[in-house]
Image (cartoon, rainbow, N blue to C red; front, side, top):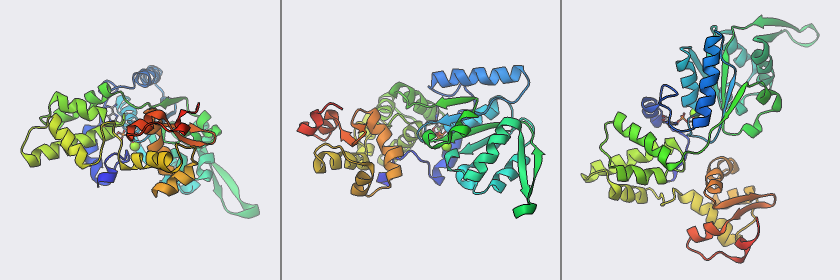
Length: 337
Ligand SMILES: Nc1ncnc2c1ncn2[C@@H]1O[C@H](COP(=O)(O)OP(=O)(O)O)[C@@H](O)[C@H]1O
Ligand SMILES: [Mg+2]
């Protein structure tokens, strides 16, 4: 669907394809140089001391490589990997079952860790710190807690909303990696690598054009690459710059990588609210989307592109945004932000 092409969350059909493209080592992982070097040090130190690496929190918008890095942490240390997610942990018991079955040195990946049940969070504090959990047996006055020793493990948590993690949990990670959006040159290398792995014949010009429209996000870059490949296949032409332009126009992706929802958000602020400020919930209702989607997916990219500013009184369209919509910046856009 055209509206979904720039959404950074992966759907199911995409997962198998992504698996094939996931870098297996830090060396193959493109960009994020700082984080890569920090992780490298942490993993090497653990290997030298023959212990499980510290717990790691991976924070950042969807599609930037959190799951990939979790797999790399396990792979580089030749450790088994167990994968689960916050929404799958509804009760402390769900977590106890996972923790008690870990083997020594195993890497436990909890995706969307901010969505885990509160009761499980508290159990996790103790498990992370002392490799121990207290299992409650019985109810009411007769309830007792039985301590259970766990095998030493490395927790890798991923979150798109690190602000939602309670401090005690955040503090128990030995290292937090903040993943940044990728530069076009880095995305170029991501899709160049993908094109080689998938044996796609794509022009350098086309790769360049795709990199500039991928919202700084490898998952989106890989997805646009496939749409361009489809376009060239169906039209019997080369996957060149013309094919990129035609394919992305078909999918409503503009030259800055904005899609219909991004533009709808900007239009609402500019046209209906004279440039803002507009509150998040008003904005969400006006474009018919969940506030969470606007906040986690639409806004980070618009802010980073200099098109939107978050102020204490609400969201404001910048002069750049007015121009992007083909307007002269209105009076409201000239305010100091
Ligand atoms: N640094 C990178 N180098 C190469 N490919 C990457 C990189 N980061 C992400 N990818 C690719 O992008 C896709 C999404 O990455 P993923 O780790 O699932 O993101 P997240 O878990 O943060 O949503 C995967 O197919 C992965 O191969
Ligand atoms: Mg992921």
